[in-house]
Amino acid sequence: MNDDLRKRADARFEQALKQTGARDPRTFYRDQLKELKAGSPDGFRRALRYFEETLIPTVADEGSDPVAEWLEYGRMLASLTVPGRTVQIDGGGRARDYARPVPLESMVLHLPENASRPALVLGIPPKLTPAQRASYDLLVKQSNGS
Image (cartoon, rainbow, N blue to C red; front, side, top):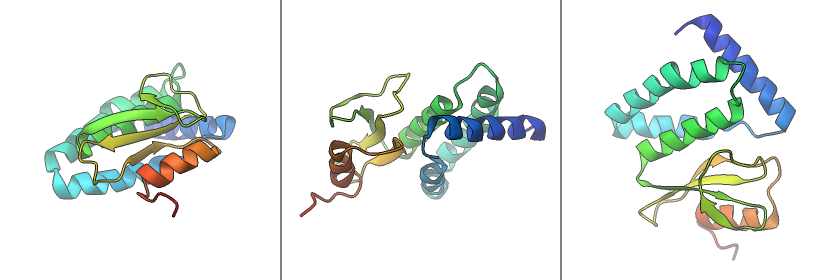
């Protein structure tokens, strides 16, 4: 991968995070990559190929939305990690299927088909509403607050 391209993509993403107030999702994605590397070498290779051949060139392009592109990468990682569906949860706690563009104030989770597994976090808004916090606690932390 071209180092200049990577630096430009990183700078554009950092700038987009500052401008939008969006939370940096890369920590969540690193955890998914570790799980892929341990459990699915083919999935891990596919994720790296997407990162190098699609994500970085797209984010480096001045016409792209870096936050949205990273969110799409997270969705792809989650689908490689565990079968399920990706949803976005609005401020009122209403979930709907993931569809681009995702409003900045939406929380994005990947819900595994196996309900005993916790949801994977793909994107969290700058501030969770009480309804989103309840969804996070139930689906990600698997706690009902009691």
